[in-house]
Length: 164
Length: 165
Image (cartoon, rainbow over all chains, first blue to last red; front, top):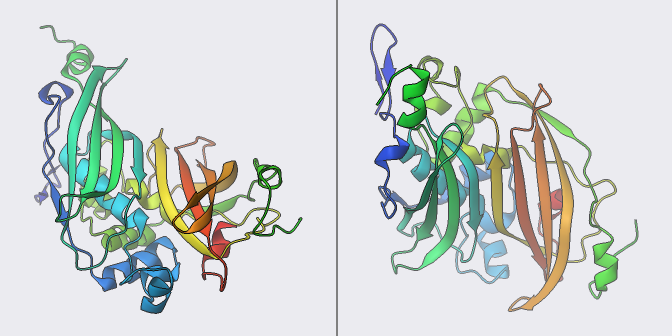
């Protein structure tokens, strides 16, 4: 949600603090359903012109019934789920995905994520997530892991000269 | 460079470890960030709204994490003699150290850090683990990507295959 007023004072998602995140927390799922048009847009924007993503004959030649979604587009969706939740004061440190199965345009897919670990670093909090793109059947086509830096109230208070 | 037949030996392919591409330079402009974020369907204003972005810690528009995918490295020098015809992306691991902002100038180099084969459903599959290093105009490395590419099968070469060679 973006609010821009006449003073150009803006707000997006409020800050997500390290202290407010619990292990086991499930991120708001992000549903996705690609169109063939989106695959063409992604081919153009990313420069990936491997034809199994837009040419049905090439896809069939490679043993698929339909053109397949770019792996990197699926990774973009997973990153979007994370950044949408974590907000603009977070920073992804590590992001890993494995393209284990193919997905097709028209399929109802959903990005999911869960907090698996949290610890304080020198200047910020770090959380680890397991993420994945899931098919309607519940099967994961694109599993992954994320390490995310979040602001911590511990350090924020010190910066502001405050005490507990 | 030596030609590589599809019945290559382990020794022959291991010789390609450390093969590098020449740097290619990209200016990170507003249009390409906007085009990319629209293509992935991400309307976060940090990628498309300058006024909004000015008020963030970044101070300006930044790129979505996987935007790096669009900063394609050039081909290896000399080109990798691809023995197979079809290509699959097996996955990526990104490490991020600094934000990439609109106005940055990013130089991109790729290097083969591992290469091996596996037998599978598609016959012999050649796995190429490629490390891509992104360097900005301040000589900082904002990110690394480690990408695993699989090639397999004979016959007509996939268009786009040689971009990975």
